[in-house]
Length: 172
Image 1 (cartoon, rainbow, N blue to C red):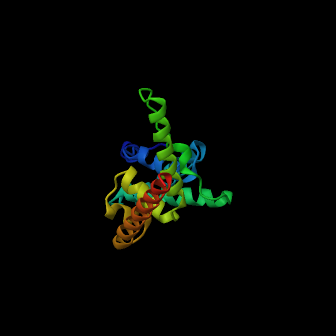
Image 2: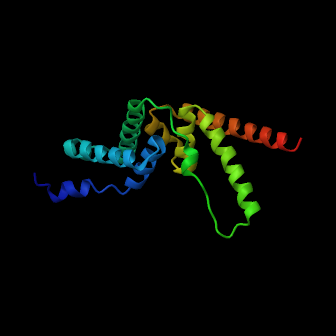
Image 3: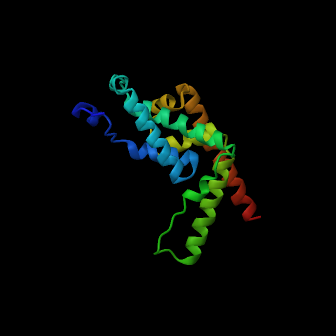
């Protein structure tokens, strides 16, 4: 099957890195994330005329990617992965004690993040890591704008309280 020039331009997604990071954040490994992005491209290819009529292609692609990733995780019947494995920050200029302190702090934050409900964790990821607006997050997660704002507020409040509690116990 030969693809016209117009169609090939449609498949060049400038936001494909965001899609990949979203898939990777949900499924937890590069192989599944790559498979999900490939599935997305196939879906677009099979319905290219409908895809070209979509007004907000990025939001649509993010929603489809999220759904494919969640389906992949559910099909494995494994609990949601621990995102701690993917967020090690390393700087060769740090002293060993500073590196240990930073690592301890990051481990605490990641542990607390992983204890949040899945929707809150996803909303924090989309807002604080990917930088999406509340409206975009509402579209991607298929929730209301109010739900997104309330969930983000509750998640941040929970994290703040838990971090303060941990730090307080450290110095008792």
